[in-house]
Amino acid sequence: MTELKLDQVVKKYGKTEVVHGINLDIKDKEFLVLVGPSGCGKSTLLRMVAGLEVISEGTISIGGKVVNDLAPKDRGLAMVFQNYALYPHMNVFNNMSFGLKLNKTPKTEIQERVQEVAQILGLENLLDRKPHELSGGQRQRVAMGRAMVRKPSVFLFDEPLSNLDAKLRIQMRAEIKRLHHRVNATIIYVTHDQVEAMTLADRIVVLRDGYIEQVGTPMELFSQPANTFVAGFIGTPPMNLLPCKAAKKENDFVLLFEKGLEIPVPPREGGNITDGQNLVMGIRTEEIHPTEGTTLAPGEARFQGTVDVVEPLGNETHIHVDLKGVKFIARCESRLVVNHQDTIEITMNLNQMHIFDAKSTRVVY
Image (tube, rainbow, N blue to C red; front, top):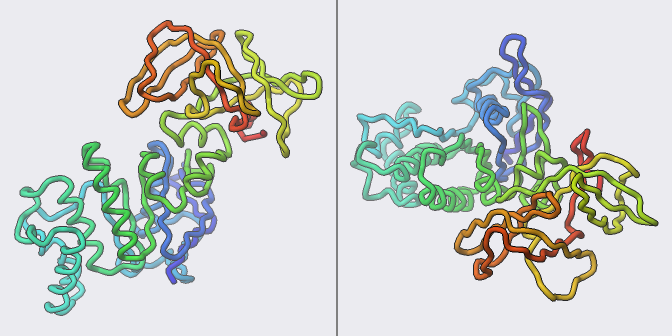
């Protein structure tokens, strides 16, 4: 069992604290993704786990053993870097086997391990090539293979796909997902790309400014964001987030917007909003779509607006709609033809609406 535990982990550079009291339990064989914008502390956290950065405060345990003072080579980890870090004068075989040779692994075992991993990664015919003779995706697979031959208990990936083009990133995401199923090891993966996080992770840790904003499965973060930062960060395109104010109307609440737009709030258990409270309404683009003449389901509301921008994507179209001066992004089928300045009716599924407190940014309804 290779479980990792971070207990009140802090990182300081001089007097400046950049990672603030991180608590995190990573399960055995879990694929955990650390995601967040540049400068949020995700790579620093990964490097502290690897032993490449000294921990200022707190403890990191691997398999129940505190490893704060252990050298990187003694932690049972293998790291795949963003820049591949391959030796240019060595061929693929020697790059993959270099760590094993340093550990004085028998030659026959080195041969077996490299051949086994090369077969898994589709590198069997490339073992005699040098890095400059490989494509970006092939170099990334060699870097992964170098980690795999060591048979580590934990893999650490630091933005491994950021140097690849969009098509190759999709291909390599699938490769890494297959790798996790095959090696059955714990993986901690750092990325700033929320699409990578959503497609790869068992659980995602969203970081901002050295703090954890939320931890959960991809669908938990997508459908139950804890605050406006997570709501806006997870999802493509991002959730519509619009400032408004709560107003009591008979026994229910409505949301009032600056330009006079009024949106009803469906009754829901556990909600906690008050009359006059400054709020932020959040609703996903797929919960807003153009409709005409269809019957409204419970919790839906219809509005008339003006098309501001049309973004055709082939499989779908994103429409920027102006509702009384308030801008929403709606998602619809690509077959629907709309043009700039068209007047259209849109339906919102208000059952899927999120309401956040404007001051704390935390979800309240």
